[in-house]
Length: 572
Image (tube, one colour):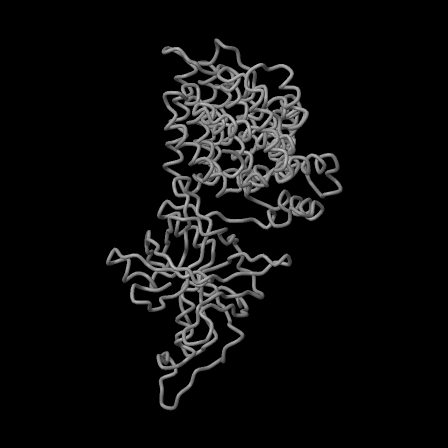
């Protein structure tokens, strides 16, 4: 980073901040590097390793020496952040002043945590600065080591994995002030999360599970450890569902573990946890009866293992069973009353933190709204009980999202975008601008979270918008690829988010709906041939779309590939 005159201020690095309204890049640095510019409402200039330069706005400077920058353009993939305070080897990426290289990586060792800060040893530097007659407790501004270390302010402290990737574990803030030249200090990433949360900014943390998913055996072992570790019962879903949404077969691995619990050392409470998560994931795939049976089995185990329900796990499963219970068209009001009672019981659970309650209630409210929508989809009459209930749930979800923004944003921001889109697309001709803005936000949110399933949902809505604009070739190409990606991942079209969109597509655009259903069942080539046999309209453009989509279909063989597919060059 430099100021307007070119003076080096320190280092900034890109991090995964979750904000669907901001498609650009967020960078962290030490606040003391940029505070003078921030106080004068000025921007800071960043220089990338490639040599390119651009200006960033300074969003805030915290008292704990943390500042957040924003660049309006996408600068590339952010560095994943993990909570890791364990002693051991590390690296520090800085911009040492006065040496030939403007950027350098120093070997380091994390010696521990001192006063809440990472205590980092730079192995490459001398141990003690000394000068005759100088107070050893006062740094030497004239020391070349001191000048070099100034360029490490704001630098990321990282750990390198076996596959060559790196993960951020902290942010360098200052050097040792007692003459020990190779000692610097940094703020751990878990504390960075808390500092940003105080500004209602959500910094996404990566779990080690995500990095191990290429090896199913290793992932299974890690899941076993997670299920049997004490505490955090209620947050298990938040730690595993992200992997599921990115395309990992977490539900299938859990199913295998549930079949052989002794092999994995799972006791009754661990089995209850596994069954609860497994049932919720399978409900996403709409495996209804089997999932509800799994949920009942898990609740029975939880009742046996924890009769007083100190963890609140049984109450949460009771709420889910109530939500999934078949409901008739005339008893929505009585069901809504029971749902509100169940939510109230969760809100009064003494064993749960406010953060846990907020997450579980928001998750339940979002699911309840979707189920109400699917049970009686639009168009809704003016006096519709379903419409009133849906709007009330949507408002409740938004209120929780505003109140617990940093805590809920990771999983619940995409849920709320979906809740806003579902009824809006039924009137897409008059609400095209609003729907388009929601799709843009939804795609940004999906990319930030690596949520490939939600990204596919947004592409289906984008296909509807393209049809409205008579961009039929683009619309059918998007439909082919997004549907093929979902099919490859084993996701049914009855998945709640997909089903909510397809209810409208079926009513509003029969050609698009038939294409989606046939491609999902038979693949692009065979599905399109079947569509061509039964449709009279749009046949030629669908055929052209399939020829465009087929060469790209290999890139979506893995569901996560849809996130990096350059869809803008496929058609028109």
